[in-house]
Length: 298
Image (cartoon, rainbow, N blue to C red; front, top):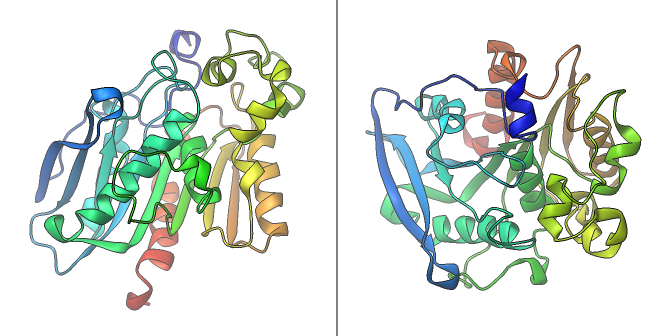
């Protein structure tokens, strides 16, 4: 699978899908949500053309080993079906590790949430119902959004400081959660994460095992607390890139903290692929989002 060698943490769940807009959907594209260092970061909002009221929002966070990826690639297509289920979907670009090291990516994610709240009325969004969904590196960043709500030094200064960056639910597809344990959890022949050229080492700016304190700051599991929102976690049991143990330890930590969490292991599945884009998986995601973002409909 040559794509894995080129981009080892890229989401493969929706590979090959065309980034096509579903019928009956309005798109507002390339909205500037922040400008770190004078460089604009852009965001797209997809929503039903005729919403019945303020829409719950799913913030889609793409994967790509923290090195690559874009809101404009085929990954976003894997979330746009939600627009036909009464949701708005927001897809955004964040700074990649060749451009900026951690915590820039987390700053950007939180800035996107704050911007959505600040502009909710303009785009018919419900500022009190926002979820984060991502896979692989995007799963990591989604988990960071969920676990680090209220952590002041991860907020950054990219605008709308009067708005909260908390999310009300998290969908985490096979995201890393504790970089320091990834090699010890790897399946035979699995990817190595301790070397200095690994995605995680490049993200923090040095070999992770030689920078344990900085690495711990980049781990979602560091911030788990009883105030975290509900999580839905899915992970392939044969993932050669992000070990399934990464999701298992997050599940255990969230459950111990008393957070509502559901964890599905997908037998035989690897790092993404069609196993994560089935009717069964979509039903899981939709039921979870409906439960926590549409309580009035229950």
